[in-house]
Image 1 (cartoon, rainbow, N blue to C red):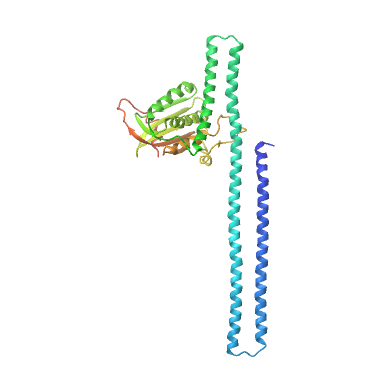
Image 2 (cartoon, one colour):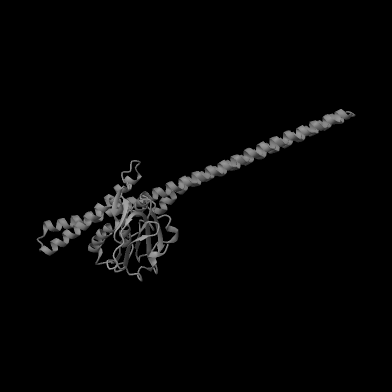
Length: 363
């Protein structure tokens, strides 16, 4: 039996017990309501019979006829009042029970999902830690036990540095996610940052690391300044580019664009040609620890923190983020942030490929 099935069975048993108790309470309350209504009806009919017998013994004058009529009317009013009271209490109880059942069910479902997400996170973080540590250890052991030429040494050291960077990025993401949840969040968009310069820095970084296995297309506008936390801004864009690399095949195109658009917005677009995101998953991918698919069978690396961090940082900077489908396949992330200054380039300094970027201007 798979772990997921075990977890499902683990959490379904309490739900079954809970629903059984709710059904029992409903059945008991329905029976109680029925008995009370029956009892009130019998009491009312008894009062009517007693009144009829009592008045039928005598020849009634007009005053007694009026008294009889008032007695029967009062008995009917009392019966109607008791009936309305019972029905009102039953309706209120039933609505409260339904509301409480819904809230408890939602809480248990959220708890189940959170437990599953945390389990997924532990599984993924274990893999994310083991792989680079094993690679670094193997490289060190090789260097210590074998005499190697300069070229193989540099290759091992280069691979080790990539593993170290992977570990560093992982730790930074975990710390950043924790920082975003604290009440005393020190990340504040108070610094005037050249977004164009950041895009150039990231271009150099990713071209050096992944230029051989992905085809990057960079389209940037100079110079575009935003009020931001620089470290947070770098993390935001880095996570999206790494996400595009992670979920797109080798030799595919990854397009990164920076534009100044209407309403003083800086628009960042990152498009890949990967597997894409199903429509029913798009509302969930910014949830902490959430990853598409099953952690036991998923082959791509990751912890489920990257897109959560991106969404939190975009909100922190007063921006918006959207997801669109790339054509014929892939995903497009569109971020818009308010900018403080835009210096348009000279005509000969910037000439974007409009044909390739026709989708950039879609709202």
